[in-house]
Length: 161
Image (cartoon, rainbow, N blue to C red; front, side):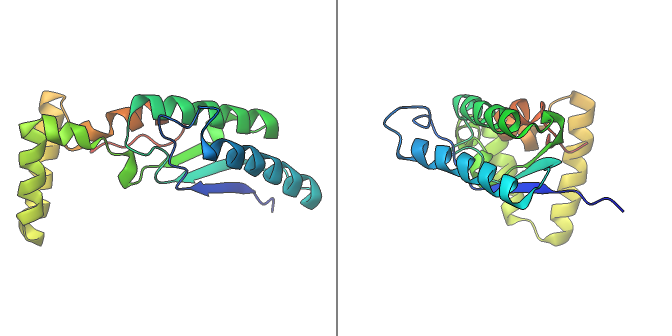
């Protein structure tokens, strides 16, 4: 049986300054790439894919995902990993909190779910999913639009469908 090797990253927190020459994280990410290459070479590994769990961005903004995408392209290119073997899972920092602040509907749904007991919560979720499918507007996932645009290239889109 053939085994698969995956690289696992989490809590990268790309932010709008991440691509700046003044970013303290820039050198850290460069050294991380060098370390990953070194370990792979020393251990004679052939990674099949990459798993990125949560907090890819700092505040769920499109420019943060552009920087993350550049990093992943560099990583997959240097390690010769097919970008289709990159799997992403969003974290709390991948949610654009400005969406809830600007949309009364998103804010109202959040407050409704926060106050619901377990039975009400499940009932509300079912009703929201049905309405989202009917109206083609998934209010529960509006705040993850930036993440979904980013993760669409990789394995990692999230929706209520």
